Image 1 (cartoon, rainbow, N blue to C red):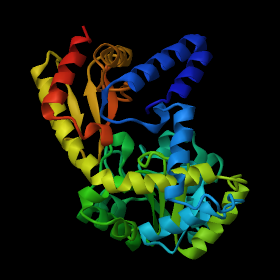
Image 2: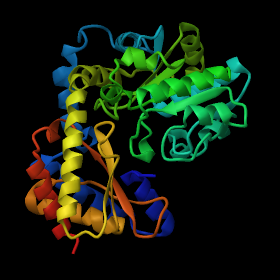
Image 3: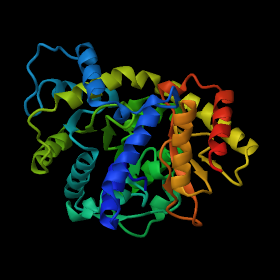
Length: 397
């Protein structure tokens, strides 16, 4: 599990470490990444408050009428965004949620009531199991089971032969903590068919669904049509401020709106998040295919660079990447690797890697990082990547 900087600070406070020291180091990292002349991606969260406000103000008029009344409890620009998402995914309706965690809690709770079965089949590395502190069971009274523990989505055979009954199959596309991995299209179709044979509904965790289309060779409506409901995020890929949407049949979405209110998600105004989402759909969505293609170039060049270097072992996973994100593994402590990356950014102006994290399994001393290739990375050549790897490895000594 990749902790955020905020989670690291809380953990250090519990352990008795200095939150001031951690905050200073966090600001140092952010400063190095922000000032770097070259990077593979420029996350929205790296931008200052003023920069984000200015960007929103500059582009808001391109996606919405600034003279219309501000939204109140989900109308106005929020309703506009919901209509846009339903159309993009080919679904009857969509509802905006302040968080993806809430959107999926509500979806899975609604399906449990409709199927009469509170058991959800999902991968043990899926977001609700790893990053939500047991919320499905604690908050919604749901029970989870795992048809497979392999670092990939379950196969049709595993779904068909799984011994425990379940009412909903949840598929995370891509499976982030396994390396942003995706099945082949035919495999995905077979998995969905196997769930249907068991009279189960299919919910798609599509937080990063936007970048799945190139691998599948299908448009978003065809991908979404495999599922009974789909959740999408607005900040993970599209560069939005926050927020998510749940899409599906009209009757399900109406029920979801009721549960959204009960869960505390009926916010008075959400126009900044809705506007940022609409801007992301216009600005980032058309570029994702180029990001995915460039990620393959970058991953291959990283592997070549490490092969030419002095590191004793490495892994780029998956190779080639299935989306515009992938993992890199090295046999060094995470703090050593993070420091090498920060020093490289400070000393050369090139930010190749960001935070590294200890591996959850395997021998001690193994660490990994997640690599994202976005617009800033399109200008990188293979030679640029190999040279950056050499500079990074030199700072591991």
